[in-house]
Amino acid sequence: MDVWEKIKEAQGLEAHFVGECDSGLLFRVESDDTVCHVVISDRLVQCDCVDYQEEWYTAEGSLLCVHVWAVLYLLLGLNGGGAVEV
Image (cartoon, rainbow, N blue to C red):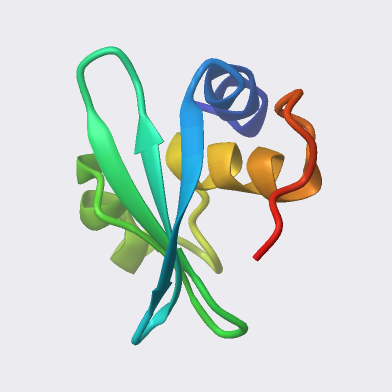
């Protein structure tokens, strides 16, 4: 899946700020049949989805799965609900 496909799919996902954890800021991302968790800090972006877990070690640079894109939409207020306050 290329970056534009990931961005388009991310627009249909629901991302919610859960709170702070030891690794950074924790988000929950929901689709029709899947719930994933994304952690973002100043040095880390990580998701517990299968795609991220299988591909992160071969990625050239940072890997952004659709769940991470959904969180970025939430943080920037592009999901229609306004930017999240943390």
